[in-house]
Image (cartoon, rainbow, N blue to C red; front, side):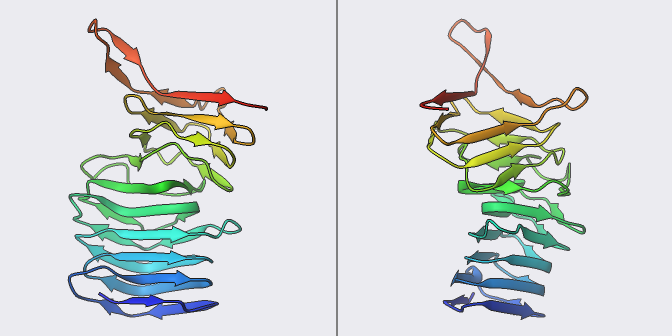
Length: 231
């Protein structure tokens, strides 16, 4: 695997094959990157300050890991294949919004998509496979807000695994029909300027569910969002 670092402005990678036993990728880019018709034998790690566009990228047995700092435009993922990562996600995302376009194949992974520690956004219009992975869901390690984030209704639930972080700012808009599930004890504090927009409609409700057994054996709901401080 090779890592290309510190290149400014714009990087275009086309018709390349990254081989070897380690992650191939691009780190520390201040600008933007476009990767076309390229394969990664052992997965990829791409971290940039600007825009990301993947078109015709493939990985077999390891994840495609993406981190973008650009809040002005979404990262575009189309015609991407990531398969056979049975211990993790097909694609891992972190940062502002990601748009999963046409031709995305995520199969035989533990999950199709997971978010990094600081969370991520999934844009309306994104298309993700409803079946074909061990756990058909979007995994969220903690409920964290960020700059201009949205959670679209892709047909997959967002599963917040654990943690109870304090969000002192940032925003998250949840699209109508989206289902959010919380693991035992998971939730979040929304403090001061943190903004959570829940956009349910009469026909498309927002779902928040998940249950655990309490000491009496009865089923009790879990998952809590708490507003503290000034509105």
